[in-house]
Length: 388
Image (cartoon, rainbow, N blue to C red; front, side, top):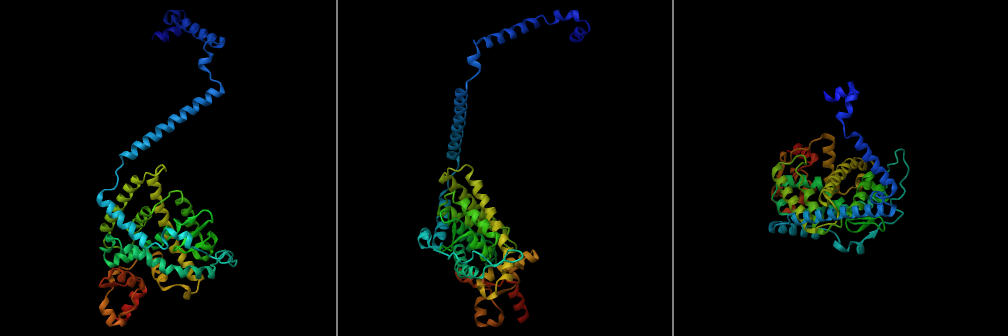
């Protein structure tokens, strides 16, 4: 009310704000002092001092970040005794099934430059170079077999039913092979080494049948080259890919999910132990799992194109066995129950007329020395049903 009355009765204003004039006088005095130079040096910095101050602020900020990072790293848990044992088993499984091991650079052979560089032009510019495709198919069977051998050396995997083992292997096979190729990316020659023996360029891999999938694998290789992964980290990454509980058709989903959680926890603790210099290393590495899953999904659709472009006789039986199932999965969004038809191994040997047995199932069963062999391919189920 007093303020309002001051506007209504201007002559009252000096009594309401007796210090108003004094404040104005003080402000003007400060301005005069600043312009006179008495306070100017303490308020305004020249360019060199401004740059030095800014640099000091940045250095303090970086120092605090490093201190926080070191403090956080010291507080993060490292592997327990049981986790160290798990890491040891996974690492040994990887080393025993990884072609050429650490000597891959010395033992690799470069695919001749005239192979797979210039495919015949087509309307959609997506022609498969048959010569390059033929070279790749020569190494695909041993590469798949090594993935199977790696899985069979993991105790958690061996405890699963044979049907689930087959589904998991078919789902992760391309992902693990892509990872093994990606970690052998050579930035100097800009090549990937497939199966530890064949070095190929981006164009050769693309024209040899993989198409855009080759770009994804090469990009992954470039990215992983900055991570400086050791054998244990690559092995644990493979185990996480293998134990994916979201594969269609699995029966022991909860058990597989728990196994993957055990691998992930040991993996994270091992990353803490390694103390990488890359910030947010663990979440960045987990994103590579997503990239590999996308590569596997894209390859499953790419396989349809390869079957159209390439003669059937160029496809090794094991290659067809693994990826034809994924073709069925893409076309029907479901997979037949592996338990819908099973054979006794001894019965099949006595009476082969029971029907064709999946070559991939034979590979898994032989490695596991199991007495039950499951037929999980749609054509095998149909043929066996007709015979029975």
